[in-house]
Length: 117
Image (cartoon, rainbow, N blue to C red; front, side, top):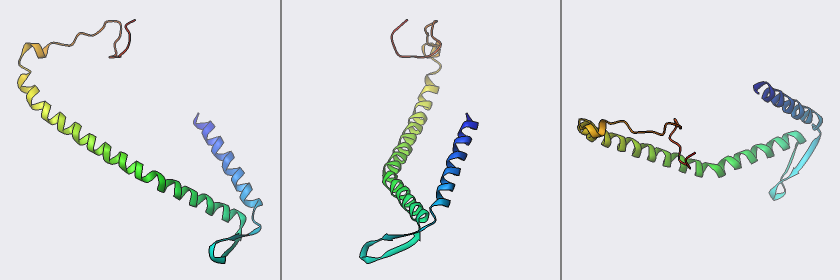
């Protein structure tokens, strides 16, 4: 599978490289306030692609940061919950009821929620 992925990457790179070589003609881009940018067509296409990638990253960044903050908050909550439950469980581990193993279904070695087969 890795070989296939590398073959696809190489083919895409070669196609884009040939596209760049064939589009070296001068092009003009009409900007705002009567500004004109004269550059090779492939450079203009690359600039448009780069601006699109930056815009996509900028639009995704707030949600990503929100998820990271939520993940950090949940990890702190789990760590606090784990720290608060370890102290009482050590004191109550002397009772024989809590030391008994939990009975599991003999057919399923996994704890799966669903209908019994």
